[in-house]
Image 1: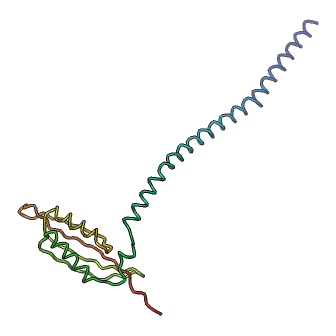
Image 2 (image 1 turned 45 degrees about the vertical axis):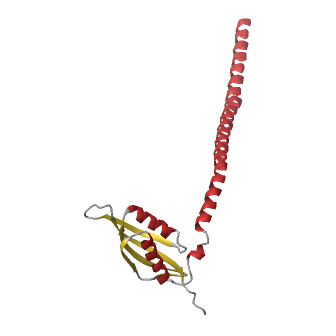
Image 3 (image 1 turned 90 degrees about the vertical axis):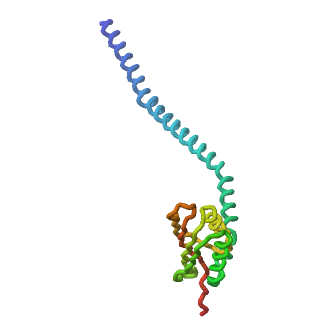
Length: 183
């Protein structure tokens, strides 16, 4: 009987030990392990966010420089859009530019005026003939004009005898501020 009692006691002790170990694993170890995993994931996400912020922080001076360049290139936007059409002066300036760059067979034709609120625009069809270097210089001259000009379309056609001259057909749009109605 003593042996049976001893065996029971050992079984009870062993069962209690298994329950304690099982309880520890189930109620303490596994929750702590899950929490550690979550903390490690949060740390990794924080490190990634910090490195992205560091990279973005390095981009700030670059972006500031680009903004400064854009501001300088735009200059005084309103000054590039006169309050009056001044179409004749502009067309004369285009003709002067073409003459300056030795372009031939010049045709400059203004289109119909388009109004939209305070802003109005006039399409201008330009045709001429010359070599590519002269065309390039002509477009640089257009870009440096004191008036806002947008090139909508460009068509370059090689001449039939391949002499190195090309025919330019382009549509430019000039802008001006429409006069406000006084009321």
